[in-house]
Length: 405
Ligand SMILES: Cc1cc2nc3c(=O)[nH]c(=O)nc-3n(C[C@H](O)[C@H](O)[C@H](O)COP(=O)(O)OP(=O)(O)OC[C@H]3O[C@@H](n4cnc5c(N)ncnc54)[C@H](O)[C@@H]3O)c2cc1C
Image (cartoon, rainbow, N blue to C red; front, side, top):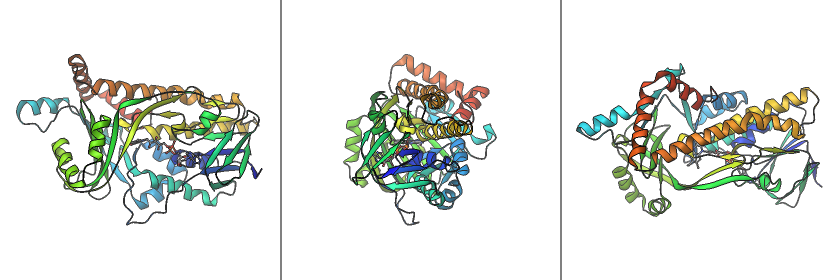
């Protein structure tokens, strides 16, 4: 046996790195395991294809952890407005007029904020969090993969790719949707694949539109723009897997023309395509988040349809709740690996995450088809969202992580 720790976190992605840092002020001896570390930032580095729309609540957490100012000093794009619509509002005449009436635009002013959030590259968030760990004497960042987990309520043994092994009374799963920890502890999960994939394309746009995220719904799935620093943007094209595969096989020139022909007119033309990737869309919710000596956080506990960009925002809320529970238990001299203590974390988060996942499913089902009655409901929803001020403000506050459901 190579090492014994009070707590071992498997996965040093955005969520794992944040939970480690959130416990840096305790006396706990913590190991954070990450198989592949992100490379250090350099200004000429191409932008990461994985970007996240971070809510004000997530930004607050990153700020408390000392990672937000470093991120801001690298690359991040604030946005003040968010527009959602169904038909092509750029269409001429009455059709365009009708669509304009059914579009809804939210603004930061409505919730008295200076911005609705920031679009940040995942790699930079992860890197900034990991950089903060270097000054923490109670946290060991171990660059190694987990090969096997022998879960036991009393003491779990974690075998690493390097042949070393660690022992701990409390293992935290922050190892993403395909969590090995979740499987080893037999916590179970409900899961299925959506009938769409997401294609993400980093582009340089001809028009500057850096203060807004927008999304247009088509029966085949939404098409969206997330602004990035400079005149760059991350385009997201949700569609059937066969269509996404076809788009992935196109040369950049052909893809550029296809995007210009299929995205809303407000995209306004593309100067160049920098990179693209596709992601399967999976819905996953762990049946239990905790057991004696184990807890799941972030995507290891829940994977949500990314259409409203809530995935890591929920993960960061898990971090806040988990850290509160552990600090509270330590102050009362309770055992932090006990299932009674860990259940307090599950109670704070499982239903809240479930509600957000169900809301995204409702959106997905409502907008991804052409049935007439559903079209009526959609138009009603967009109409109400455009008109009812208290409901709009509440929805925005929930999406921003300021309020709970
Ligand atoms: C197309 C798309 C767009 C998205 N947009 C948004 C958005 O706008 N806003 C938002 O909030 N969310 C968004 N998400 C979701 C977001 O990316 C995820 O919720 C987030 O990355 C989850 O973070 P995590 O740290 O829990 O897991 P992960 O990011 O999956 O990190 C897990 C880490 O664990 C490590 N690991 C795994 N297994 C092992 C092992 N055996 N040994 C050692 N290390 C291991 C991995 O290397 C990785 O670093 C989007 C997702 C997709 C697919």
